[in-house]
Length: 485
Image (cartoon, rainbow, N blue to C red; front, side, top):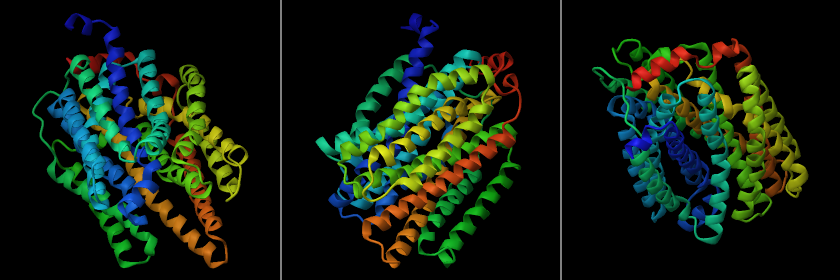
């Protein structure tokens, strides 16, 4: 086995294990979404509890990712990966066997906590293993495709399991993936970690976790009024705690998030774009799934199949996006991609009706979204980690995932508020129940489209430089390899 691991091909087998990890983490964000109506009915959950089945996972995941990245850097990336796998599997089994809504939400939160160990360790190992050039582009393209298609795969798999087995298997199936990941990780992954005397930033961890949690919870309370005391209190508390976190990071010797990681203009742009993508994929696309089941009356299986079109387009366009990346660099893709996504979301906002056809009123929007996301997933994670030193590989990888899931948590909260207010206004003006719900979904899509226009502007202003400046160079390879060994 050791002789095999020394061969160059072993890196690609290792990438397969790490890609599986990325799939499980992203898939678990959406696989439960397709089962929400069934789980809500089975456990007698309220609509607020239903939302928290998605939010609890995304929030704990996003809030703890920075700590998870530092644990991976300091304690060892393979070791952190394996512990994250075990914990994720146990939490999934707990959720699949839960007997009440509160218990299920708690299990989802624990899932997110262990995913926060798993994801940055995996992405950091990709960064260390594929350090520059075309192989790095290919590796991150694969990871990007998995991240992009994992959400749709989760919806499809969730539909199959919910319809032919039970909504509980949307959680229990993770145990199968975990066993595969642990076997592959034990055989194929090699250990790496940051050298030197490493210390954890306790106060930075406390302030960022409480700050993000307060901010997201404040947005969820906005459904009861933006001017209410608890909404303003939690939002203000979140802002203050996050400002305190930034101040702490400038003072401690070994910060949880070295500001050099996010102060780099290009990386900052990539992180912001990732946050917008998270809000769209975890927020507004949740409402598309509910539209399929609640308004169009599709079964969970057909609702999952209805989302496959976007995945097919992403996979079909990825070779083209990869070629454009090689020829022109990431900037054109990061500007054009959000514009295609915005066009798809605006189409959905205007086209969906209570009795509309999938092929004429939904499918064109999914095709545009697929084209746009293919242009984003191929370069984005690569660009977000460009120029990162080996010592910071774990925390930088965590920041990539954290921005996605925190963006998604905020997106779910904000879109829920917009949806609820629109539904109430439509019902007040005399619209029928399904028509009012559809109006709410349209508002969520419209807001998502505006967010994607903002992402295109971010790319235009912050992601600047030639292809050679934006893509990893040979000197980075030497630095990363030196840190790995």
